[in-house]
Length: 495
Image (cartoon, rainbow, N blue to C red; front, side, top):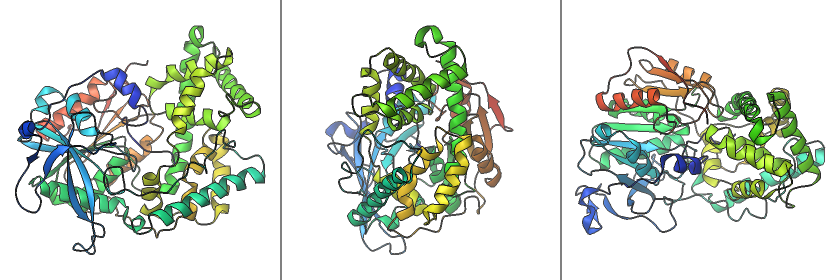
């Protein structure tokens, strides 16, 4: 399935342009370069972050050992790398997860803390971390997959059995390489274990309660934590909410029509800008122009490396935020005028992502997937008429899970324990985490409140410029009080 990630990766460049340059306070006691939060076995010593990590310059990092297998807590230990922004001695600690699954988090603490209103920022230091299996923590690997994924890639929607079998071969090889490279880790890269890791972080900070902000997949992680540790759950915001009632396999078919609907909104928006982009004066005309470009790229890939699959990836990435719509429309407009440089720059950037071992590790192990490809083919072919631009694309993203070499976990039933009041934030037309999933999360988390904004941007609190949604989140973090009832907010202004 497409990543249920957050503002921090899919549209990080757009966010950087929107937020501008921000300067963060490092932990106040860190003038000497190293600072400990406490003494004893859970002491955290803060210093510079690992070279090559995604932490912004000046971020302070620490490491924490946690059990690989919580059934054997004294067995093999693995490393978590944490980051912190704000005052070490602030009254509260806000732990943040940016989504994914498998998204590096140590760059997130600064971005969140700098975006909080001043009255909230003075009450919290903000901590994030690379979850187990990710980045600067003990990582999983799939070895060298560069030779497996070539560009231009075959079209996502197979028109021949040979095309489908070629993609299946790649999916099978990716699963085999991941299994060979990380065999000892893969069974333990689960959301339940990541939630237990967060309780170790809470303990290391000597907090009775975990205050938490989770985006996208981070909502599943947070709700899992609240179910496992309700007595230790503090103020919790779940933003862009994952459906807790279905498997990851099923959730990709929930995404398909939501993505197609969002693409229709993009086409309609581009039609209102026809004088700029010249793609058509109606959504139907823009859609036709888009499909004509896809067909042309199949016949003659741009730069011999960007075909229909690459432009499909570009469209999918732009569905997460309308901040990207102008760039995508301009790239296609330029291509239609004979200049492929903008299109190639964008598709080349996406191609750098390649295979995401950590995301596959969490998705493929967290719950069961069909092992018979005929089931995938049938379900995807059934979804394709309603989501022709995304159904096959979405299934191929997850296809290695059909051949995964680690046993699946028994997922935690979210909501099976009585949890403290939780705030859910969601946009109405979010394509990655459709609103129906947020409503189901609200149903299973008794006492929660759901605030739904107009629009469809993925990741609301602090990063969509929506003062109504930001107000709900900040009031809750300051007071711990939820809205009296569920609420709505207007959409943030369109680009």
